[in-house]
Amino acid sequence: MVELTLLEDKLRNLQENLAGMKSVLVAFSGGVDSTFLLSAAHEVLESRAVAITIASELHSPNEIQEARKIAAMLGSPHEVVYAKILDLPGLKENPPSRCYLCKRHLFSKLKEMASQRDLAYVVDGSNADDLGDYRPGMAALTELGIRSPLMEAGLTKEEIRLLSKERGLPTWNKPTMACLATRFPYGIEFTEADLGRVEEAERFLRTMGLYDVRVRHHGDMARIETGRNEMMRCIENADAIVTKLKGLGYVYIALDLQGYRSGSMNVGLSHSLQDVHAAEATPSDG
Image (cartoon, rainbow, N blue to C red; front, top):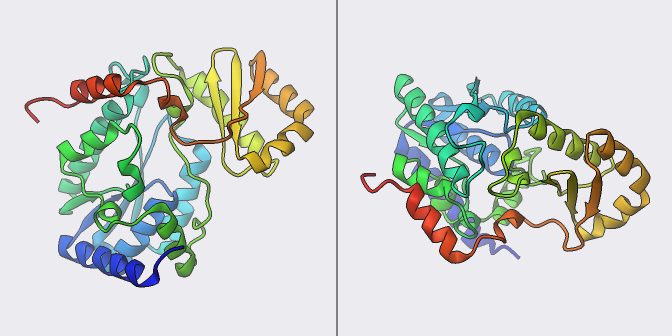
């Protein structure tokens, strides 16, 4: 249960921090966190809060369209920028530092765009819950001086959903999303065709009413993660699911009995390996 007085304090801190920044470029995906951040930034800074959405092979086209609609609804200046991420050296080989490589590249571009538009800061939607798990991308944000106002205010995902609901934002109960590369085990190279196959499989499963769902790609096997309360729906629709996913090229289709969990592909990384890759991903010269 969220303590309302504490939540009001966090919201006030967020608004004061944004006001102190004077102008921001919001890295906007159209998800729960970045939508709430853009709403707050637009409220405080008006036209000095500009939303930029990066579209790439790692992002679902549907998500890009949703981002356009939400930014328009909020009345925020918004632009979609296309990036060819798979051309980034070392990325499609899918090392544990993948997220670092990607974010370092993309947020460097966002910093250039902010400078061209005379915007003081680039901000992203990382929240207080993102301080856990293995997140090498956070190192890239730190190195580049990217601000995370929701995290700085101590706002958690639950609190952001609650505040979003109060604001009438359509994303308040939106499932958590992540780039399509997170569906592949580290060290397994992926292609644009593989990414498209995963995206289509997940889109099909959502038409069945599944909320949190991931199709983890293990070569010729698709491992479906979804909420435990939704597993029976998968079983009831097993024939349709098997037909669709086999049509996409999978030979084996498995339902993960542990259910959906964020960061499940990080389980195979030992803490020592995570530390090594975090060190490798962080240049000593900053």
